[in-house]
Image (cartoon, rainbow, N blue to C red; front, side, top):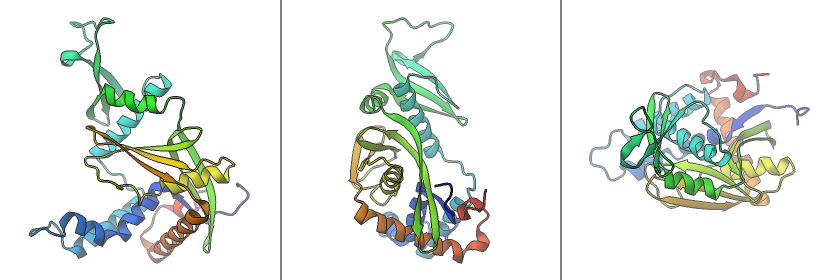
Length: 264
């Protein structure tokens, strides 16, 4: 793969961001279509979506409590799977009665951990231990945070697709999603369930079953998809080509050279 000329580099969630931009009008209708006093006009929202996509392309740093919470939850699950301490954050066990280990409380073997407090990015999150164990037990034996990449030929040249698989099982790929609210099919327009099986297949591993394992921290949900190469690769190619057209049309706004494979 290293010998092939690369013209673009796209990570999976960038394709999600582009889909969000393309579906700006539908998103507006979902949230504010029936509102008598919407916070934006459809045109203003479309412009916000455009700028958000440009910022995503340019990797503009952003602060998001929801994203931090998802990152912390993912790390907590992986730590349980791999039986290791956290990386880049601190975990504190919370026992029954809201007690934590300190000079005045030394937990014994009979003390039950009911929550895990994750301190990350100047924020603290509490996760129920039963929920964390439910996820970790489901992924028993999984390979965590597996980096994958593969080249996708397009009419504009070769695109390097890449990303991190949250949990890779022998027969299935899993992506953990945390959300404030869930509705059926929320992630069907995302691209991980196409990009990751494609990358694995191009590298000789035929794993076609994909699950988004979702929690709103009250319940858990699963969205299952099957990668069908003859159906999905043309759709993926078309989406990448549409993104390339957008990039070329707005090249004067793009500062991230990696998108154009100019980082090497």
